[in-house]
Length: 590
Image (cartoon, rainbow, N blue to C red):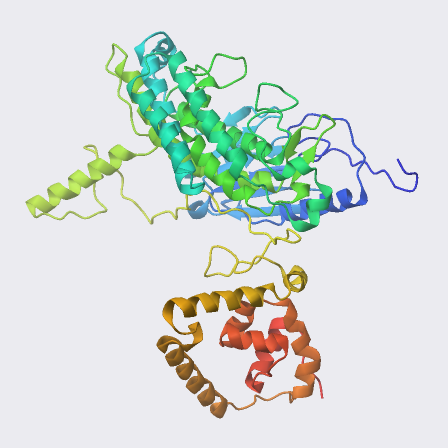
């Protein structure tokens, strides 16, 4: 090492590069000044994030989950980066996930609060195992006995056939709808039909599943590119920018111990889905450890791994969105062996998809429980405790019966079941159970982009700091591309895009509106703004803003905004004040 280059080693904290994100201590590697800055920035990004309504992740040192004045209070963070979140009972999270390696405490009042509101508390150990998960499920020894004997009879084949057929159909949808590979999709779909129709043993089912996985992930290797922020490209290994298959060069023959970010994200997301499957199995009265497709291994929830097979394509869709990036180098760490692991905040974002995984697991787990119950010599009833489908069916039947008799009963009376339900109060707000959108970050530096209140994603792909450089990099190519598109439109339609009847009518209407607004404009009291001040102070600052942002602030077209930003025209003085507020300059004091 060059003697002039400092060597900095950070102490390990939960999720730090030295802790590996899983509590295991790896050899401390020298960190550059950029690594140290990235680590500090990562903590800021992690503990300044606002959780989704579905999941609250607790991580770091000195974490505390308690109840204060009837609100669930979550305190977490590392060092000076602390976060306090409070939830009322009407809008509490559906999952409270206590992260790997977290040091802190949970009060009994908080556990009672979560149980009463239906929030599931999941505590993970350093090895990723579930230390605690609630609420507890039903207990039925007859169902457990049927589960234990399923492996040795036709019931195990039926369960395996259902799970793998669902998995293969999902993989075919991903290949066809996301990767536009109809040929591979049809191949995997045929394998799904072979499993559902012809497979007669669990070994046969495993072989067909392996054939489908080969086709599926071979297409991933060809089509998937991992996008990193441009400022990080010079600092990451070359193989980090692609998907290298479901295999590890460190742990041969296994996808564990991933050596690239794509594999690390997949492993982490699959682990979260496995946790949701274990919780779903417990709630249905099944044992997460007594597997059918997966062999019995100490410490592994084999049956949860069985259930998870059916929703792997759902997890894959979410991961594909994340890999489209841009990702940041500081969200991953590589140990001395080359094993890559995910770090916060991307681990927190992945955890926000857990309710979506649980929703997709609900009908799968109930269907498997129904198959197992059918193999029991006893009359085992299987409730729809996860999807609550029986409640909805009964409610529809009750409403239909009321309409047939002409007697419309009040909705606050008895519920749909014969015994009746207690009167319902104000409906509890429900958060979205679809997988969260990928993190919206600048493609240049990777910083998070602002999202308008009326949208679910940013309007821009580059932050103001990177936009000017990106625009100068593209140079005249944008204008040339626009000219080619206009010429093609003219060849197809016989006129330029700006000379169609609709374009002329819209332009005439806009010009008339602009003239009337100019005539009605009266300067407000305050400093008198002149053209010299606008040209010297405001106009140069517009280069850092997108045309849609300028147009939205002033109510003009993006074409007019482009002329203002380039300095080819000067806007009317009524626009000077909004533009000054947009770029953040102070008004003159004369």
